[in-house]
Image 1 (tube, rainbow, N blue to C red):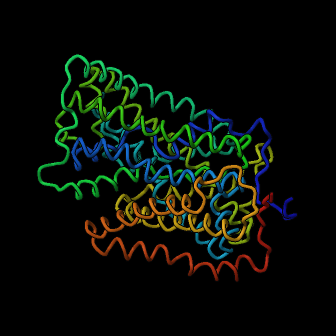
Image 2 (image 1 turned 90 degrees about the horizontal axis):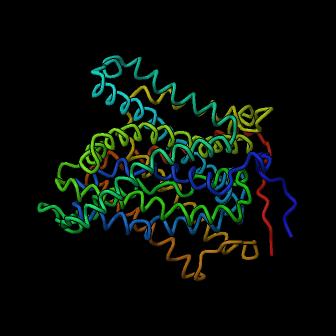
Image 3 (image 1 turned 60 degrees about the vertical axis):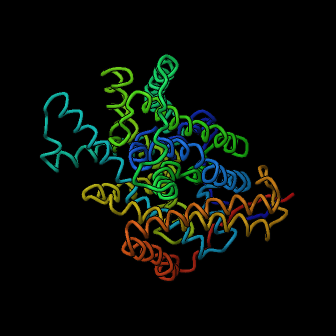
Length: 467
């Protein structure tokens, strides 16, 4: 039995939907993109703690979040994903907060990847050709960012299948060199083993301090398991493929982090020198200059692929919020050929193009806190729906009954609390109050959106099935 209510959805023929392998690759780039960015973890927390965190964080952060996402995404495989879950469970006010907070965090996050692409390209041009245009001319640097953004606007407008197909190629290009690096490192380890995990923590750090510092870095590299829920209705057989995709992607991401770091420490034990962007140099020590160059180019590909995959998920937020009347109705327009929310994609791209003009990296910490607020709402929705909708069909359930729900909620909440505490210790109150200000924009904007934009238009209801 199901409620006879209109469902928020985007039409997509089976031939245009994501099947399992493209879904895994898009999910991989929504969460990860390779081991790039983990160098600071080794340098700040020490080799042993870095390896432990790479293994432990999926268990206390990724797996609980993925279990929550699997239950809610298979119960409500609709456009908007987590926005729809929270709206159904907690009401339109909290649904708006979920959508708004998730969207505004993307303004900074999504601008980072085109900038990274331009920075990686600049490094390659300087090293290989002594060409300094991108670092000397901001307009040329911005032009590269715009090329990245608008190239993948075109890919996204053509639909989820195109994003999935491109992610397959990007995934192969990024993962293969890390795999080669891991294999060479393994043979080196067998031939001349070293205690690559030592020291466990830096001499000037405590066990707890090293854990807390590293957790924030690893947590960032394991964010985003809820991201593709926004396109659940664009996935082929989502009730079957979405949980399978999560089950495959978690170990894939973990191994994509663990094996290159282990191989790199075997060949480059000078762990204190590991800083952001160091992986190509480590790869050169493992396999030679050719492998280092491959990883350097892989950084370019990874940045582009991350933007491509995240645009697919994020662009659905303004679409479904416009369907509900909180944003202008023009944003709900779909492409006449591809049935994609092309106006929403273009609106996002314009915003990201603007944000690439300035250095917003200092706001990443604020983004994590705002993201934390939206993720906690999703766990609240999990609990509320268990209470209020006990008969709702759940093809996948968090195992263990209420104890299981309590555990999958507790561990990510504890991780977020520790990250918040670490932020307060390292950044002071500035990051906290700025994060609070960003969060407060949601409650302040909601009544204005209801009065001046929604103007009494009915909200799209979420269709659920009952046992």
